[in-house]
Length: 304
Image 1: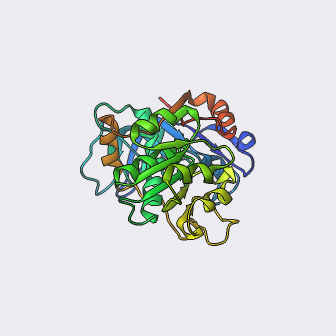
Image 2: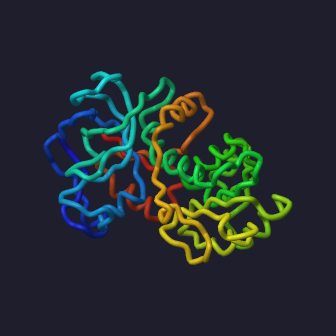
Image 3: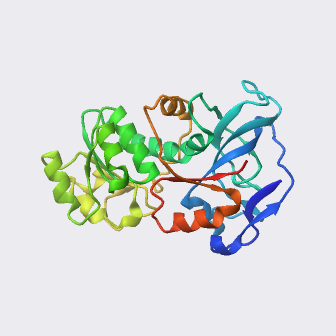
């Protein structure tokens, strides 16, 4: 099978190659799928540079959709031919950006949801769901989601609205209208975030979720609340004392609700925007767009 992987660590553009490799065999409790679509994430490029190191070669591609073509021992509830999606394990010699991939967790793709849009869900929804959980009880509270133009931020804003929060977001024009339609108040990323947010909220907001830590906006976000502990960031660390970091708290993506969110997406009641779909052979163009931070939505590789 063809697989996109690396045999040494370094910048993704230098070390990634499309290789031929044996198809992985599903172990106990696993299934194997013929991959149709694979979502791409910044974490894929970080794997190339040594994130979670292990034996080489290693594959990339953390979320996939495709058709079941083999089931492991003890698997029930699915069968060969079913269209499914889920997070792809990435510790073996191949991962999701392959013609075939094994899954430990999977969910049916409901009617009305394309494989491309199903493959866009796992990382954004899993991370946003856990991050919103980390905020605690938010019903009736005012929550600022910084970076709602990212896929995780876009998902988190919708989840917070579903949980009864009054949501303010920072976002660019690409997704501003969709966020307003979902029920959020929108302001820009420009300087002066804290003042604009306080004006929209009528005072300090109760909680902040920072889903765009690369923007270096934490000082402004801290000014939008009464105390730094009311700010939670997806960043690996915080230069602002008192700000909570999800990595530091050991929070990991939660995938248990993916099936429910797929049903909502199929019904038009939830979405993770897909910006571009590339053939597998055009992975370099996808990498360049991803690293430009101008993707404006999920990037997807069409495998077959």
